[in-house]
Length: 572
Image (cartoon, rainbow, N blue to C red; front, top):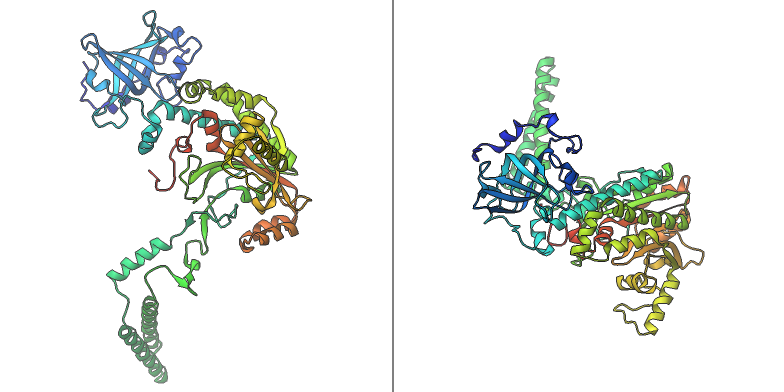
């Protein structure tokens, strides 16, 4: 029997399978000698055709139980490569079974794939020959016991929740959508641009931004330092001034007496040192604890970036500068919003997909958005169907059909004015909305979902919104009342994509910035894009977490991002 007290890492490092021991039919993991569970049980025959093959498997125990009077144990192992588990049978002669059966235990074994007894659920199982590694778990302390746990509960254990079936499925779906995003834009000739996370521009003009500053930490350090080493007194400074004066007089006297160069040089050095000491004392005497002020306001000139800086709410403005040189570009990264909201649709940190197309108008923008959304829906159906089937079984029976519908159905397109007329007609016919319907409002989620789920029963693109409810950079239409903006609305979540043709006319966008009460200075660089070689261009942003909500059918956005940040919570 293998000694359970032996260092498991040493056993694993010192043991390898012979190349001939693993059939070429079994795909090993890259950069590892184990075989992913997916490459076994996700085969069309469930892995039964691999019976007789020798493999190395590593994973975490989902469920474990002893059997036949503790002669062996059944372990359901998952390595995160797919939704399913592989059943592993370990005899008591190989390891202390009590260490193996606890949920959460990590196990690496060598063994042979076998056909299970007839009538069992699994198509193949592994009979262990050797246990190479055990990462034990104290079952009494492990926070994710073998029971149905709520998603709300799991948010308290974000570092462990990816071990659950639901969160691991979401992680694979999220990965598939990210891969599909890059595939779509690369396939269509877009260049991936990394836009800054720290910015001095407010893209949305809403002002709900996280500030990036070192002023507080610097003030704390200064306060601590001044306590340990108090600033000089006026007497200290006066004494230093007297010393400078005396040293200066000595130099003058030596020069008048025509002393040697060596004597004069030595005295001049002493004078310089005295002046340096005085300068440091005077500078230190000016230090004041707290945030630096100037004219009654925070002095950002003394901050790290010598000006106010924030976490970005969007990479759009910056990526526009690349579109105005490289034509078709996109950015895909984290964005931040300091909105104190606790709803199931808001995060403080979230991801955005933001393409920008030069020489394109609103029609081109809508065509691109529709093609992209259809592409990523189809991608999930073709590449992530096992996880989608899990979500359909556990959370939303209609999620797969919703993906099929969106990927294959032409989107309905109507103007904002037409959308409001549809909603007003619904109200006349007895439909009650919590939010009033009238021209000029920003459509609420209930309005968007009515259009997609009830009125048209498919995705809807609403375009030409009132200028007063949209951002300054959206192109003003000829009616002077609306802008060339568009939103893609989908069932389940409402708005999924927001975009527009950008205002390329210098005089118009300058006027719009002033109308919205925004300072011009932070946008001077943005105006340069209109001053120098301006071009018609358009783009949009897709909220990545909203897309995952739409795909999975989950209700809370905090469950579709690995490490959710929202008011009061920033774990890890």
